Length: 269
Image (cartoon, rainbow, N blue to C red; front, side, top):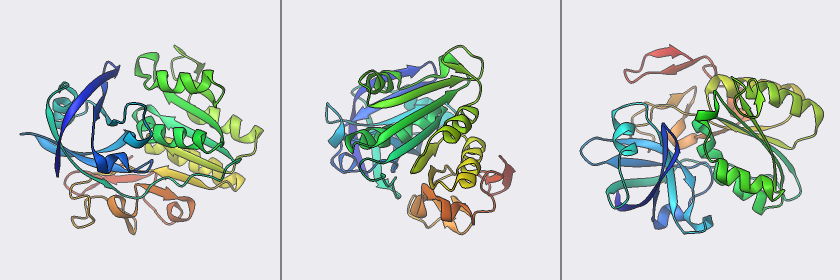
């Protein structure tokens, strides 16, 4: 574990903050990988890298955290100058489509954190990129400065949906994805967000014969494939994931249906 200083904190919305720090190993990470973040005196939690130092303007890496429990609440309350511990990066990563290809990126809520480094990499590689971002309401939006800048520059096509119609198109992002997929050709679909959403995206892509890469979330404790808390089908999310391709998703019977709680019991998604 490396101890790093928080360099800056950014409020993404009322419940979500991005924590910026400097770390050599994280700077060389790939889009989609995660780190284990230790909050002193509280706990250690897995968080995806929402920016990667070697590709950011200020050289800083970041994690983005939504308050869902004691550890995330403590991390979200930290400020610049305080210290956290970092292990990793761990796991596999998104594989980018070839230069000149066409990619559809579908994010739901905090899941957009995993997709931001990917989107920026796709743009760098001259991939024609369409981004669909769905949230419940305007107050749940995040990364809009980064996404808005890329959209204004014409580097991505951006469509935002809100379930209550307070921003962008009203409705579910899966509904927008169905329309976009039926009206254009794509070489790959990337997605991260609620698993029910990704299950729907996977089904749509399968019907059209389009390969997907999805970032799955499970309870991760050790991050090195020993404890088994993150097992999904025949795979371990911390070692075999978190990015899963179409061929692997087809054999995971629990995908979109069940996940395990902290006691190892299956719970419906």
